[in-house]
Length: 484
Image 1 (tube, one colour):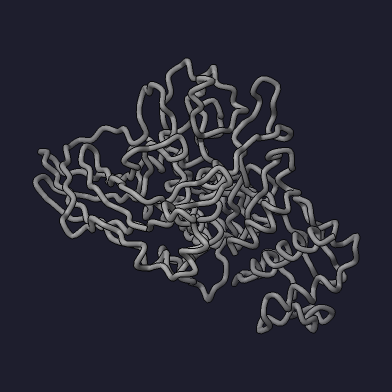
Image 2: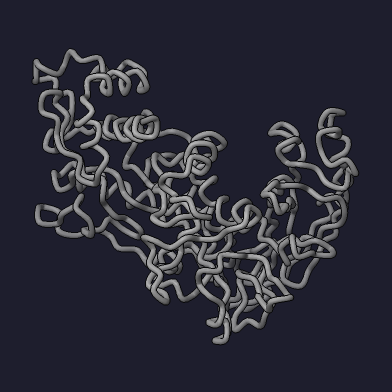
């Protein structure tokens, strides 16, 4: 019953938020011309949204509550609540697939952008934001024209593209958690009408509602009898912590998406949509032209798609997955790409050589962390210490070719002696720069040790290990010593 109430509150909250529109053509609740509903507290826009939701829920019967938990939520005429259609799509443009949007009126078409995997290859967060912004504006326009029955769009798809045999992988931004998470944040902020930095615009009203999907470990369909509605994904806590969950954490915490969609499948025997640890403790509690994928050789198809492990297992011949852990041969590597020009890099000397995390810790943190003090728990360090530990890496980039070009700069990090637990390398930042022939610029990356230099233990605990790390730019490396 508690799950039902929570889901209903989320649904009603979105229904109230979507009402902001200057047009009277679309259906909306709390019509000021309706004397039967205008006096309800949930219609008083000056009240806090939580109080409005609580008031509306208190007026609903059990049958009415249940009726709202489906795609096509029926109207509740006695309360002036209109019907609402939750299923609308907008992966790379507002779509007529689903029941929420039609193009049989004044608006007969909208903008269709390239498929997500292609725009992800630009490594350009500003571009992703502008695409989301355009989609959000067109979604609002279609609704205001009376050609939409809802303002909720089931996008973006931010599942990790771990296996090229998954046909829907083209809908995603690729295999890297940082890239996928940054895409989610940029796209969601654009669609919902926020600024690129996350500031609230439009007086805080939603332009449209984004819904990050599919939460979580969902990237398989129609393979050897397995379908997405019923397969059980066996995933280690370690892989959940540092691969599958980070994009959704970014979507919720940084992008502030107004919704997430739980996946149809189960994870470790528990259906995602009934998983208390996943939905309540984690999502609601804790979070309040380069290749964005690896191109595997043909013999990779011997690996079962149902094997969700990221890390390799040499004893069984399992090669691991994605560029972070895969140790087999590659046709094309993550980050491979062609350019009309050539570029050279250098690390600027102002980048620190040593991180004295020991100086940032209080005695309690030192006691609570590893007794040998060879590693620190990120959760024990806390938000304030993690903020203080951030540093800047300054990179010089020069266009040494004969023509102007736009170029994505990818900054990686790796352990000096990577183990089976740590990634072979990990993307920690990316920026796109435009340079004329012979032009040079400096690019600054903000590095968070808690986010970018931490490793997941087998229990799913994120820790920072003492020792050396290398920052990597193509063939350039920069050594950093972490002192705990």
